[in-house]
Image (cartoon, rainbow, N blue to C red; front, side, top):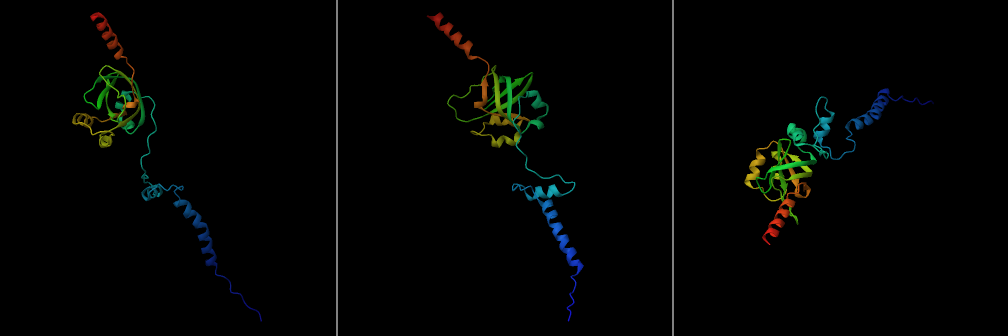
Length: 195
């Protein structure tokens, strides 16, 4: 007696092939490159046609030497930059203990010092020429985050009035002028004249 085999339905094979080929495609479309830091909003934004992905701002790379005119000419392009280098700027005015104005070619930028304890604090006086490294360009939203002791009301008022300002640690300020040499020479002359 012969046993008739029932043929498998063709739709079952077709469904199996669809699943086998669709799984890698689904996995590929939902892959976030193995980045565990991506949020659901970033993944949805990245896969939604016409939508801009929502991503956290990346730290801005260190910036080479710039001028005050560059910064003031396009503040939005410089806000958030770290590692800013300003060389040969002059100090026209020191209105507060934590803040001073720097000037270059008639352009002025307010600088606030991160007040960290130091063995020999930098003494900034009007007329000095400075080299500043590792500066940070910030706007008023950064005021509550400025490291160090609380800001005095005068410094806070000046910062509130600025579109952009420089934040710098006193360790990254170098006095290029030798304002102290004439004073030493003058005091030596005065001592020798008195003797």
